[in-house]
Amino acid sequence: DADVTQTPRNRITKTGKRIMLECSQTKGHDRMYWYRQDPGLGLRLIYYSFDVKDINKGEISDGYSVSRQAQAKFSLSLESAIPNQTALYFCATSDRGQEEKLFFGSGTQLSVL
Amino acid sequence: GEDVEQSLFLSVREGDSSVINCTYTDSSSTYLYWYKQEPGAGLQLLTYIFSNMDMKQDQRLTVLLNKKDKHLSLRIADTQTGDSAIYFCAEGTGKLIFGQGTTLQVKP
Image 1 (cartoon, each protein chain N blue to C red):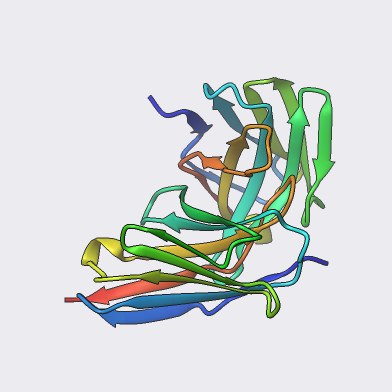
Image 2: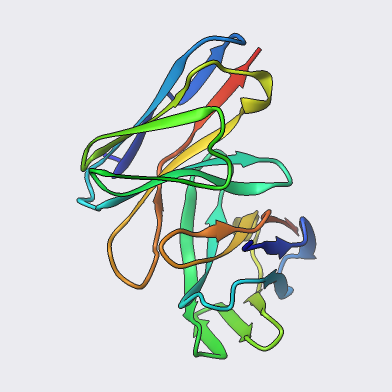
């Protein structure tokens, strides 16, 4: 079983719809992250959380929100999806410590029509 | 703000060495990282280097760090077709900033 699980793997939605991407982990890590990947732009940080009650904005948080429901769960919501939010979304986790070793899920490919 | 830059594409012949380069702006990072992304998969940590080191070798991988020029490189010796992937440089403390990724194409 994967240590970091993202659901769904693929999602097609329409402009204006609200959608949620979910992430769960069995690694026991405190820190969780949401990134989006676009060709030629690499990975950009959307939101991150260092603990259950901690939420921080990343580089590109506009149009997104998150919820850290438990240590193991971190969900990303698009309140009103728009076409330029079409991307590959990754959840990642890391443990506390100086070495920021991230463990990634397999990604969610989101298409907004 | 923090920025990490990489060239987008590199093509090599099987058996040759590959060198992937990266420049970064944040000099306060304790560690710098290389991640590998194979098709259809998430990123996996390949190797990392402590910021006080100049070089780290791990089997076929050699990481060179020039802190003065804020330049990081990854050398893959005897490149194989299985090394074809996207390679990301990353740095940061508390949260990682990634470069654009370099697509490595290995020709037989």
